[in-house]
Structure formats: structure tokens, C-alpha cells
Amino acid sequence: MRDNDLQYNDQPGAAGRNGPGLFLVLTIFVAAITAMFILQNRERTSIEFLFFDFNSRTWVAIAISIGLGVLLDRLFLAWWRRARKRKNEN
Image (cartoon, rainbow, N blue to C red; front, side, top):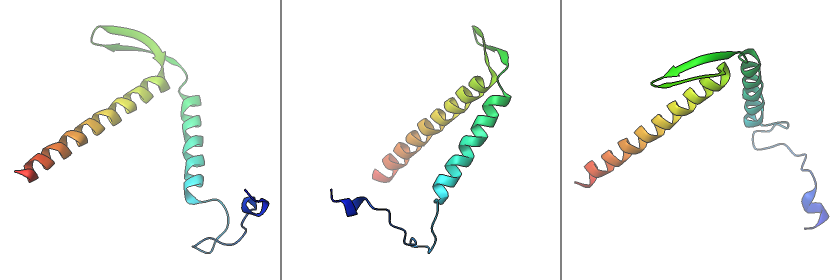
């Protein structure tokens, strides 16, 4: 690469502004909110599910629940799309 390829371009973007993009600002905001959530939910709690019984930090239990919810959503959407595709093919 040439040296001038690596130079910073200080010209305004397509919207006519300089500075961090909206995605970067939102990412930093979500990271800060997540850090506050974790710090406020560090205590241990007892979790009972079917024949499982264990202690976990509150934020870990909530994060696992959210992850399972996202997984169920993805599985349902995949099933729904496949069913619609089959229906449209017939």
C-alpha cells in the first residue's frame, strides 16, 4: 500500500457531517447499559428447572433466558419460512 492510501480522509460524509457514526454511538450506549445491568445483578440466586437445581448469578440466568428466547425465535422463523415456501411451491 502507498502511504497516501492510509491517510485519514477529513471530508464530510454523504450526510455532510463528521464524527462517529450512529452505529458506533449505539454500540457504546448498549455496552454501557449492559455493564450497568451486570454490575447491578451480581448476587447469586437459586434456580430450579425440572430436576435441575443450581445457584447462579442473576445476570447469567437472565442472559441464558434471553439467549434461549432468541434461539426459539430463530427456530420458529426458520420453520415458518420453510412452511411458507412449501405452500407457495404447491
